[in-house]
Image (cartoon, rainbow over all chains, first blue to last red; front, side, top):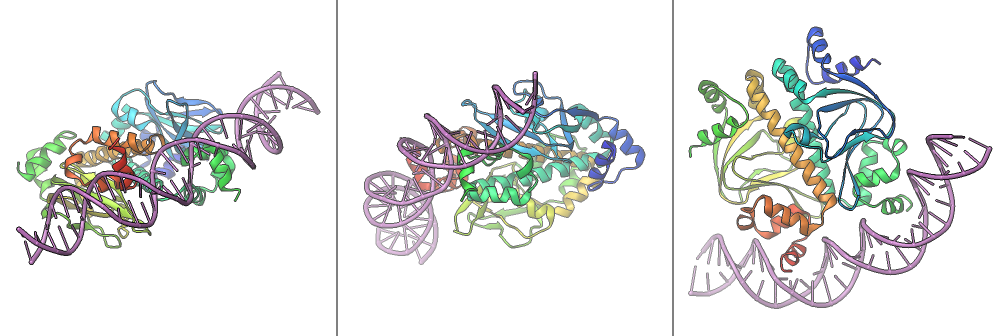
Length: 190
Length: 190
DNA sequence: CCCTAAAAGTGACCTACATCACATAATAGC
DNA sequence: GCTATTATGTGATGTAGGTCACTTTTAGGG
């Protein structure tokens, strides 16, 4: 399916735009074809855009002082990803975003998103709902962290995104769950 | 300060409304005076509203099968609280909200918020930014959970909200940090 | 097709934190 | 002002998961 059509169907789930309005909205996105392993956002650099995933899989992650990686999000098709903190508050990136697989994305700059939100009320509504969902998902994950042990979190993750098991190396799943790769390995061999 | 004035100043940080617009917006809120220990949202019940805190301190929390409590948020003056998952998706509450101290709140129903967002573009913008901030804060807390031990998280919390130390019993702080009250007690006696 | 690098499995040991049990201190209601 | 709670402190002990060290397997580039 065409990038334009994918985005169109995605936003149609939340709002209704005329064809002209959507065309105008869409004209602010740039298509990018990315290779596996390619970096999109790098810690310490400026963040201009957010990214809508068309195909492939991205990861947003944080590297701590001991060079240990923590994954905030696996971004699958029709998901949005960026360093939202840096993007919204116009500061340098503190998290990274890169490609786990070859990927295609549409990107829109922060200023263009704000412009679109201002010009088209429905677009503002769309982005409000998108963040609402992200916020709720983030709260749920936080609760899962506090309430469940690593095994339970692993089962939850696979129940929710079975595709990940095949696409994503296990040590990245461990980095998402917040356990060591050794512990994860032991979990599913018992 | 008047409830109306508190809300007015709060939203003025993000958007600009005329006096008439704000009066209209404000007319959709109901004032409530609440007692310490009083429950606002109870698991399993319907959730109609979200709450803007004028004074006092609320907690939103989850109780697991072992009756262990996990605190999602301490809501201080000018913070918003609800079971947003239940509110947005019109399902029964899975989390609770109640008063740590005597408190005053303004509440607005889900349908009135949506009506306001539709009628006043600026209000939609306000709620988008409010959730943006909540989302970013939630991501940060998630990272802190993965990256830091209990002591570090405790110090972070106190650095960010020194007031909590005096207002909130320690076992609730433990429930926010995701450690046992015994562990928390040992942390700050060393 | 091979060779190197990345990913994954596994044993031994360590540590942060949980749990249980009980003691003590602070509050709130009568 | 006296109890009954509720909150807090502290020792003893258990355990999930971390770390380190090494081996085995898989996969990608020349």
